[in-house]
Amino acid sequence: MEEIPLVRAETGKREEEGTRLAGSVLTLNVIGLIEGHYASPDGQKVTRYEELLPALADAEQNERISGVLLLLNTVGGDVEAGLAIAEAVASMEKPTASLVLGGGHSIGIPLAVSAKRSFIVPSATMTLHPVRYSGLVIGAEQTYKTLAKMQDRILDFTVTHSHADRETLKRLMVATDELASDLGTVLSGEEAVSVGLIDRVGGLKEALSALRLMAERRGECRPDGPGTGPPSKRS
Image (cartoon, rainbow, N blue to C red; front, side):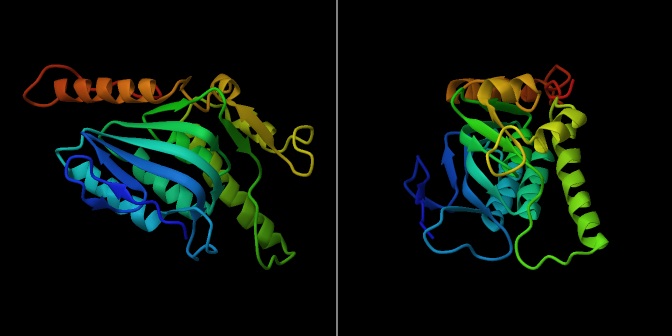
């Protein structure tokens, strides 16, 4: 695997691969392939759930960290691993923001919408397609039921944590006039916003500004301060 050394800005200490502590915002990279329960081939850039999940848990408890920023440039990968990370992000009380750079494809979509605020740069794309299965496939009714349930889990999470309509997403996932040799749809940054997957087009400035605003509002709603807390993404 290609290692990406990460450094704590104020001390120069090495951090876990896939994370970087910069000021009070923890930045997590979701890059390349989202690795599942089996190691990916050497030379492939991967995101590992066993590294991101503890980092998210630590960030939730660390008073020095005011928010978490997810930077996504991923081709997708393992469904369970991707959903595990997405569920962890969605369950955090602290401010979270996601930014799609390059690509947020396949299971990267639930990760992109898991944050309280989501952004995508204009040149980035997101690919929606049906669940794919590798390895031995048994041609039985139970196999198709299992795949359908897996697809529903992805759709349920995505619809719950975005403004996208379920039927629209299903239609885009099985479109036959977009990809030359597959089912699905490739959305540009503006299109991802127009269908309700992503909150708005923007870059680092907008994502960090959103985190600062949420952190300020979160401070106002604590017992020693006024306010009623940050607005919900789905409000």
